[in-house]
Length: 116
Image (cartoon, rainbow, N blue to C red; front, side, top):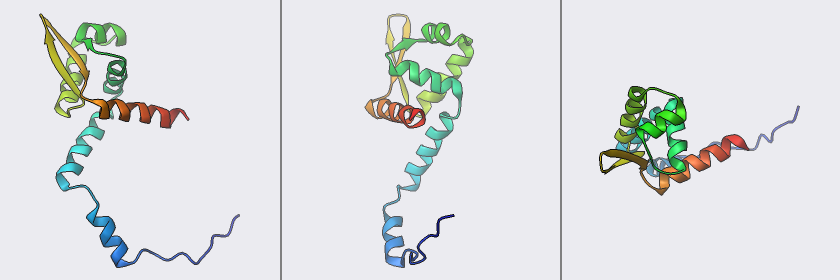
């Protein structure tokens, strides 16, 4: 068993206060918690990875995942509420896509992290 150097000291009050000042706001933390809660569902994660490859309508997502339209719609509603996914109308179809490049980067980095 490796012996650790016992010279380490705990952070001082000034260092701790500097770190606390750099914390996100309570509002930002709350929004992040909502996003992480949304990501706890395998269906929502699968939808995000499908949309990472390009926009899709509900029927396409339903066919890809073999899940009912109501389950897909419920998941998409949650993803829209957390602004991970956005929708646009194309004729009579609602087409879903990732909200922005931040979501794309986050999903790609998360996958890369777990598949290392």
